[in-house]
Image (cartoon, rainbow, N blue to C red; front, side):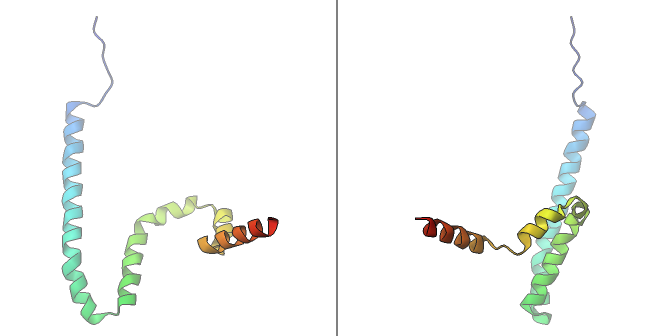
Length: 97
């Protein structure tokens, strides 16, 4: 009696391995070139402009997920800060006792 499993084939595993190596090389290239580029931009731009550009580049991959954003949750949490809510709840507890 022979049992066949519908798992990944040897070719697909090799392709996944190659894809993983290529992605690793791309990440290493980006990581390695960021320091010389940043060193050159520090001379020409202010630190706040550099941070703004870095956050903008980091936000680009997340833009497709904006359509799944729950606006009601975002609106409820937009004005609340973490420390402000803790202070509000601690004040309510202290007035209870």
